[in-house]
Length: 127
Image (tube, rainbow, N blue to C red; front, side, top):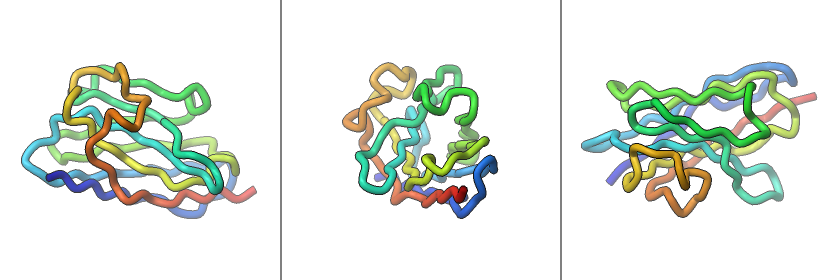
């Protein structure tokens, strides 16, 4: 069983930045890791993903150039650097782990690809 714990969320002004972290516990960290978010009143949506080796990433068009995903396998942690934040980026941000496909981000945009989910961390962007 894998547990994922997100941290780093908070209240930030528009244009600001945050660094979200997702720490995994378990026997292995050999997963493709993804970040998703759910804004108030909306469905959860894909943000980005990264393969186990870090060599392949995928980003939603809405965050390209502003968000960066990375990972430190030795610490079993994945990060999401979010910059140039906008009020519409207000959401609960979730990390997720795909055990079945650790070497590809093909399919990583779909929630069904992930077996494990964290509880989320709230990001609130004020205008």
